[in-house]
Structures are given as C-alpha cells and as structure tokens.
Image 1 (tube, rainbow, N blue to C red):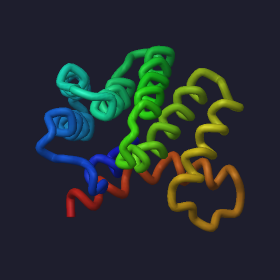
Image 2 (cartoon, rainbow, N blue to C red):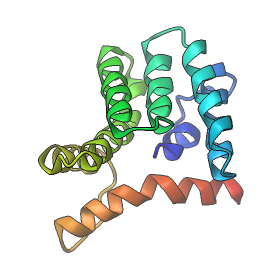
Image 3 (tube, rainbow, N blue to C red):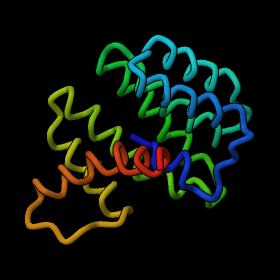
Image 4 (cartoon, rainbow, N blue to C red):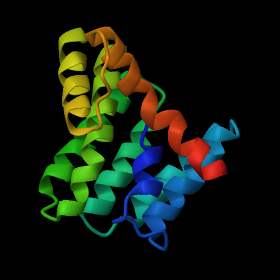
Length: 154
C-alpha cells in the first residue's frame, strides 16, 4: 500500500539497495510474480543498515506473508522501527504504516483497532471532503495502491 511513498517522497534514495529491492518487488507483484516479490522484499530486509531502512523493508516483507498473523507481526515491527527513527524523513511513511496495520487488524476481525489505524492514516494524509466514515475508509484504502502506479506508468 505504499507505492506512493516509495517514488513520491523526496527523501527516498533510488540508489539505496533497500528501496531498489522494494521497487523490484512492487513490479513483481504488479506482474503477479508473487514469489519473486517475496524474494525481493526479503533481499530488502537483508540489505537494511539502519532503523529507517529496516522499517521500509519490514513494511514490504509484511505484504508477502502467507497469514494475516504474520503480516500483523511484520507491520507492528515496521511501526516500532519507524518510531525509532529520529529523522523527519520517516514522517511521510506513517500513513502507509497505519494503513497496513489497519488492514492487518481488519483481516483478523479487529474492527476497532482497524478503524483506529485507518483514522490515523487519514489524519496524516490529504483527506478529501467525503460524506461518511465509510467513504473515508474506502478512500484511504485505495489511494496508495493505484494513483502512484498510474503516475509511474505515465
């Protein structure tokens, strides 16, 4: 759910191996090569050198897990690592971290926890003038997935 932050953040270094592996994983996912994506995300995790890189890698490793419980564990780790980063550049990554946690909790039936993280994500992003909380949640769930892909392909 974080395509937006990988290629739209001014703080991301496209020469960084962690970022490169994550981008390769995203493209593998787009091409329905999920095993390749999983390997790319694992390479990103193995290439980490600090909490910032570990946060990004863990976020993507979470995407490739086979159970909701495993995904939740990696998403929680990613958030913990993000809190350890003192550089301001991590701020733009929080909406995607919160979205992923919301989705993990929702997948496990944790509606209250999911709503909490969806609201946190929406509060940090550019929130549109929507009619209801349901519309807000739906918008937040989708904006990171498609808009950046369209921008990348253009």
